[in-house]
Length: 157
Image (tube, rainbow, N blue to C red; front, side, top):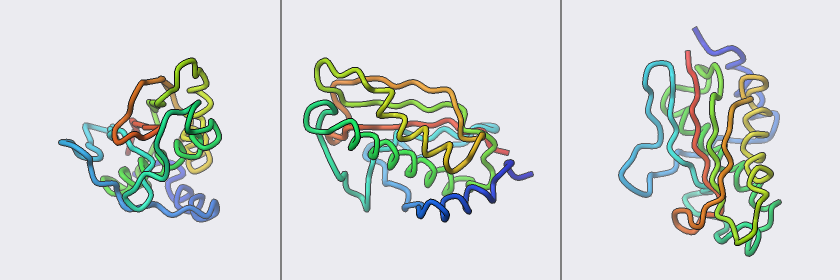
């Protein structure tokens, strides 16, 4: 049984003018995604484009909220690519939980607005199945100087 709306995810990506990238190569000792039972756990995804970070720095200093929101959207697209490579988007039943990490300048408190970039992408591509529980956390540093990182738990059929 495929996830409800599965074919819609591919159609929505096309309608939005989005193409799933190649799965980002891990930057340490882990795999991009693993399945346990009916859950897929996607490792933290950085906003790689063609293997490179388009921007580095702290949100609220070198990186604006708008730029970081776009980077969070890229993280979500990379997470979908990891799910596609492991089990296929057609098996997604629900995005259950999103964890968002924002490299924050001192005093920066708009982490939820930044991670909306990822949340909004999941909703745009998957509709109601893309709505999820979430955490948006400010951190002092992220790998490779990335401003944003997003991890995902998805239920699959």
